Length: 365
Image (tube, rainbow, N blue to C red; front, side):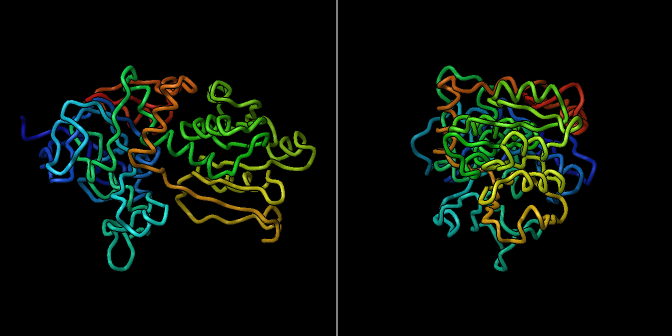
């Protein structure tokens, strides 16, 4: 086996480039995965722009689909050559946070003062790939705590069909789960990028019967209808808050999902809610937010604001792949482009600038 591999590394804000790195050594609880497909995430763009700091030289990416190349001596129940995915969030499930039900906030990798040793941010320590350890935009990735995090791919499913499971699908579905959706609810989903589209699909699966998708791109709104949206609003052509209030007879929506990460969409997500409604926030925010006083009813409106980091672990991945295998949802249509790893810098440029109708890019080492 070769000793070196190609990997996309963070150099400095505005620069991610290919480099040669050693193939990782495999510890007792690890698994070395040969990447067959990965992708670029919106969070990677925040890293590229310097809005979310990571260490220089870190391999970026957190959405692995591949084949087990080598197993650690303590990992049981898997075999080399097996097709697997691992969640973007790969906790070890031994931390206080994991055992308290929020494994994505796995605190066992925080410094003594409760901050991630890499860059001083609090929490998010369950997110290791491309954040605290080398990630997946490479020929190989080392999966830590492999027995807790590797999920076998069911026979008959392609890489593209399961590519959304490690992050996009898990995050979007968590947004719907955090929205406290009940059968018959009205839900508004702001932004129909890949995560918003998965939140739209999740809202439908959970029983919402009036799903309103909001975006400024008509093509994405068309896809939102395929994902389960009943009504679509292009915010460039109407006042979304006003339209939602008309549709609900002034009552407001039961819940909203914010999937972009801007002040405007956050505020509107609160403004469309009924008293006692739930705002489920999925966006990655790059600056401080303010809460509009009227929409928040000065703090007296019984509102709930839930935030989330993508749930990981093999059981979460198994459930998501079950949804795909059941043919209840086709997320392969979100993969709009394919690039080789050698062309990943070009792929970043396409994705960061949202050209050519791009939704998700399959990166093939």
